[in-house]
Length: 119
Image 1 (cartoon, rainbow, N blue to C red):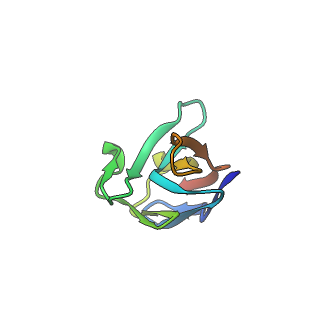
Image 2 (cartoon, rainbow, N blue to C red):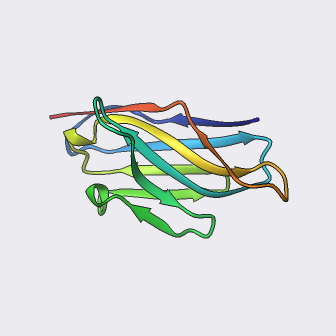
Image 3 (cartoon, rainbow, N blue to C red):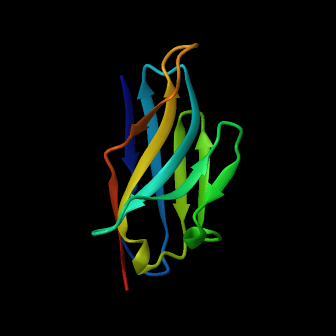
């Protein structure tokens, strides 16, 4: 019903930049918040950044000042600057989606995109 498709991952040297994109499609009436999570090998998935439908943002302390989340309708972006090796992880897009005008919002996940930062 709802698909989240991420793009923009890759390999970059420390200090470099990458921009991730995530487009939501399918049966969508409304999306409240959209966000990015990441999971490094052997670690739990963690929140990186989230943006509400009103444009409010929240960031993990580890990425504040380096990453910027933005949104254009049903697409969310993550601009990542000054990347560090510890940013290496699979990055997942997440969205709260309402498929009709009266139901609850359900969470959907993208398939993930690998970001690797070399030292």
